[in-house]
Image 1 (cartoon, rainbow, N blue to C red):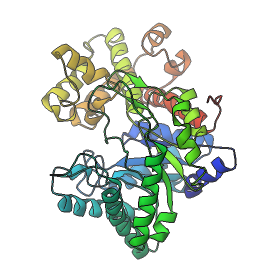
Image 2: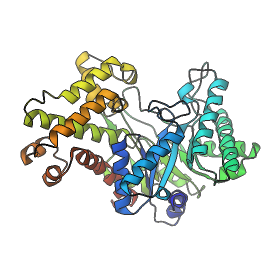
Image 3: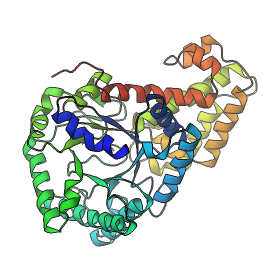
Image 4: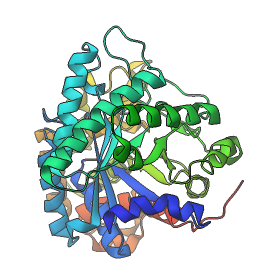
Length: 429
């Protein structure tokens, strides 16, 4: 059931009835709970992806190996009543990126080990991303080098799958790949990938995989990452323009077994997301917008408790997050520039949502637990829910736990994606 949700994407497009799938790129338990609840409610498969920086053989910034991440998802799925055979687990940006400051061979050896760990753990969708240069190399590599390194990674994946006696994974390839974690500079406009560049990427990978006796692996490449002209900065969104990518949509007619995987689709409108799916961008990756919605709801509850509960203090949870971010600036320092006030605003409210790196810290979890305990003893008036949680119904806020309120906030985003993937929006060309 799960694999068919991916392999049927190209078939649906060529049959004239395109559908999409949301790729949930997050390791936060409440975000994943929201995605699992949505899957149960809609009786559909759910695609959950871990990135190379979040999860790898050394633990990543979540402290989880691929096996630990699957166990973590399985625990949440059991709580939400979703069987594991409804969950597609993907590895995003799997390649040398976490070690790109090291020599290429050292970084690639670690990347091979990481891909092997993902397949060994049971991930069935692998994004082969060897497009970035390592120490002493250009920042972006050409198709030939990228394809050769992707083939090396695929070879490891195939070998592990054969040894385990399991179905080998499907793959996503591409050379015009956004940076994992989001843009690190201001954005004004994004130029879509040209049809010639996309065609060259596909052909170079086809030849390279064949030369490395990976014919079967190439047949399981389901998607190509290209730039559809969408991205977001700290406070702006580059909106999808369908007419600017008609050349890419038409290219898929030459490659009927492929669709596109669209990265950084966060904050696009429902209409834009639907147009992406209609035009062949069938895999919609979203991450920061989900934790942005989570942060909005938690900060809103922090504000409500400040207004409502005597002795709670003045937004103590937000103050805790500020201290954590200032004490450990590695996750935001190179992204947020300007005055101290501007950096403060972006730390907490940027669309890139680099607050997400800090929710797993002990003090953040303690502040969140305290907020839940405080609010469990009071009823939230409709006036405060209207003021601080206007996207949610007052009835939901009044009858739900703080955790359920946060999950509902994330669910609002996921619903927009699900509507687009089911093509419930008008197509605009």
